[in-house]
Image 1: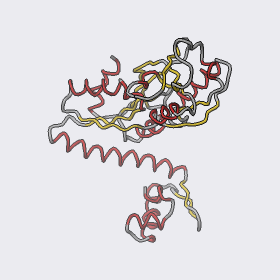
Image 2: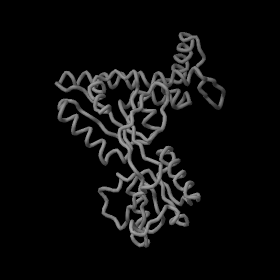
Image 3: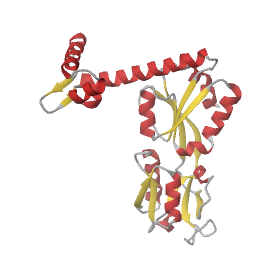
Image 4: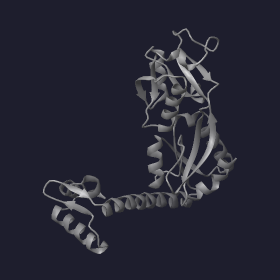
Length: 281
């Protein structure tokens, strides 16, 4: 893993506190045992072969699972029912995550949880590599080997500064802000969200002029408050902020903000098996 991550034998040897010739010898022995070439080497570069790239992903999974198993054994020995590792987009914290944690605490008080806010892509990768048990994402589809269960359907709302003469009383359609700059969540953070915003504007007959992107709602709202543009966000994100902005729900559009929970089909964490019924309900 050190060589695969560094792609440099000297740096990997220094990281492992062993000699470079000794490390090279161990890699050659590994290649002989596996009957496969793992690295392509020349005087300047070290590159993973396809077999090496596959092995790197598999070892990442094995090491992550082993570390989690060790921690889980210790927790169970001390009376815990284990740990559920949860990834989420910020909008899930408005309602879905708090409800899940409250119910877990009521029905499984000895079950611990850990939370990490991550992009859609990073959640999928972490679940595949056994770093997370579940993720709350906005994705229309997921890779093979993962389950996806929609858990919350939201509307979209337009966010405008209070200095803009626009509110629910005089709002007719999104085309009224066609000439404004748009501040959006980055496509890297949630491509499904980004594409839906594009389609909302496309249905209104214009292409939005995107001036800023962010992965945090607070940043987007502060930029809107400063008069640097408008935004379109899942409606549930509007709560918990005291800023000089207005939220106008977009009621007559077909697009919806669907939040889904995902997990790996072969995840063996007993904690996940205990709470799966929550998602169906």
